Image (cartoon, rainbow, N blue to C red):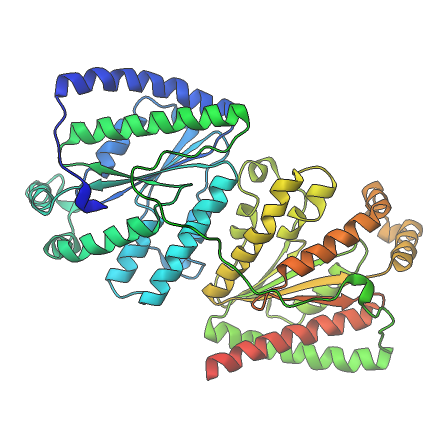
Length: 503
């Protein structure tokens, strides 16, 4: 792709007239983006000294600073290195109606990591797949992604670097690695080119800017941004998905596929399983002691552990989580109770609030309710259209796959009780003053939709119980049995992972 780019020069007077017109248009378009609630991400990648900072400054000069954020992506810090590699980009996602402008992006991260031997060729390919998945998930959710690569020649880069280095004011902007990269321009050229080709998709195509001439580059960027925003606003008004016109052939993108072993339906689960008090006490001590030992080994090996709890109202999730958490060193875990999303969460991709809650590697993240509300509660309660909710099965599998790529053990529980047991627990809560806060009118309303929810759960388990993140259905009519099964399952999954690492 880069080989096809010709460096050219636009007439300055002609360009400035058109740029002034586009700047005024961009002000109106920024207001249209806000009104249409379109989140916009503009990535400015390219060679060192290609003019990324100055082009961003020119782009935002006339925009309302309340509705954009500019982030400069640098080498990940110690905390960021202990999270999934895309975590820091999910964290930065703009709200609907706002702009995020990135100086560098997930592409800089990936190319530099590969070129500096921080990741293997296999890991590089995995990252390319992660990037395409990430961008598809965002555009499916209504995000507009405009990707620029500022291309300059080797001689032009060398000239600019030396000019920056010769001034006391700008010398700090040039580091020894920039000079080394210029000397290895051809190697970086090939890697950038391959990366651009492998991520040039229909939903997020690349715009390669000939940037030897700064006015020409500014003109091209401004024109691309205004055209893309106009197209996205028109598509939003008509209820369609915007497809930007690609400048280069796009890849034949295919969504990742995952194997789904056959799972039991809820109606096939034996709900008579139980333990005596004596059995429970002995097993509780055994598995809590073992879990504490395993937590310490996971911390030493920096294995992240994600435990996701779902289940019927009054299913016993809280008590179950309490028995797990009480076995753990409190410095090494966080319990994340998930309620109805806040306005700031509703203004972003629904997975944003789960990505941003992940603990660092070596720690446990325990979710009380999860991302599965997207495919259960939201379509049934008409919060999310069924068509959009159906897309979440694939997105959730991709999310969990990226967590396991990071090294996480993902453990998912559905705590199952039957309808009679739920009724008994509801009545007990109503009649016990210390438990009345646990029962609401919403619980009774949800109970009326039991059959709908049961079908949704069966479908959820069938479509998201993967080899790498399988569901465990816990027979929960007897709380003692449910708690021991959860502890035993967690211990087994952690033992299996540690055994893998030891071999």
